[in-house]
Amino acid sequence: MSLPQPATHHLAVEGGQIAYDDTGGPGPLVIGLPGMGDLRREYRRLRAPLQAAGYRVVTLDVRGFGDTDARWTDLSARAVGRDVQALVTHLQAGPAVVLGNSFAAGSALWAAHEAPDRVRAAVLLGPIVRDQPMPWAMRVLVRLGFAGPWRVAFWMSFWDRLFPQRRPADQAEARAALAANLREPGRMDALRQMASLSKADTEALLPHSRLPALVVMGSRDPDFADPPAEARWLRDALKAELLLVDGAGHYPHLDSPDEVAPAVIDFLRRVAPVPLSPVHGAGPRPAYNPSNA
Image 1 (cartoon, helix red, strand yellow):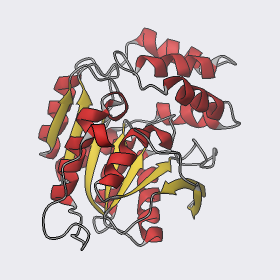
Image 2 (cartoon, rainbow, N blue to C red; image 1 turned 180 degrees about the horizontal axis):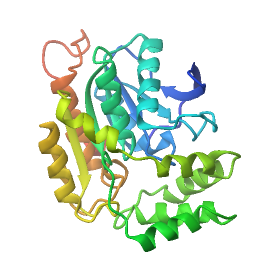
Image 3 (cartoon, helix red, strand yellow; image 1 turned 180 degrees about the vertical axis):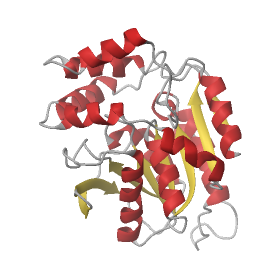
C-alpha cells in the first residue's frame, strides 16, 4: 500500500531549487533519491512501511526532474550528493540513511564521502556506479532517440523495459505523470546531459568507502548484462550486504516491495535504530508485515 503524495517543499541550493516531501516525525531520517529521469514518487511503495516502522521519510526530486528546477549547470551524481547534504542540514535531523536508485546510488556515496557526519548508511537500489559498456549501434540509437520531437516517447519506451516481469498496480498513472513531467521545458535536455556523464569518478570512490550499505538488485535488471554479477561486484567493493530479488527489474522497491521493504527495514534497524518510546515500551517494534501496510 502507498500513501497519498505528501505536500511539496522547496529548498534553495547552489544553482537552483530542489523539491522534496517529508512525512515528519521524530524517527531517524531516511532520504530517497530517484533514478535518472524519474520522480520521487518512485518511493511510494516504501514510504508507508518505513514510516510505520518509525522512520521519518523524505523523498527528493533530483536536479532536472519532478518539481525541482529543470535547468542546472551541474547534473552530476556528486552535485546531487551536495543537495542531500544541504537538505540534511536544513532539516536538522541527520545523520540520514540515503536510498539511491540507479545513478542516484552514486549520489548517496558522494554525500557520505563529502559529509560523513550527515550520512550514516545507504541503500543502493539497482545501482549504476560505473560506466557500462554500450555497443556502437546502441550508442547511435540513443543519440537518435534524444535528437527529435519523439524523445519523450523514446525515453518512455526505454523506461517500460525496466519492468521486465512485474509492474505496480498504478503503473499507468505513474507512467503518465512521468511523461507529463518530461514534456516540460528543459527536462529532456537535463536527461540527455545526465545520461552522457561518465561515472568513473563515482567508481573511484568505492575503495575508500567505509559506509554501511545494502545493495538491492533485481535479477532481471535490463541495465546490466549480468545483474547478479554486477551486484556481487559492488557488494564486494563496498563490503556491503546484498539482496538479490529474483525476477525484479531496475526498480525492485516498486515491483517487489513485499520482499524489499522488510529487508530495508531490517537493515535500517541495525544502522539507525528507532528510539524506544513509552507507546512501544521496552520491547522491540513488531516486524513489518506487508499485509498490514
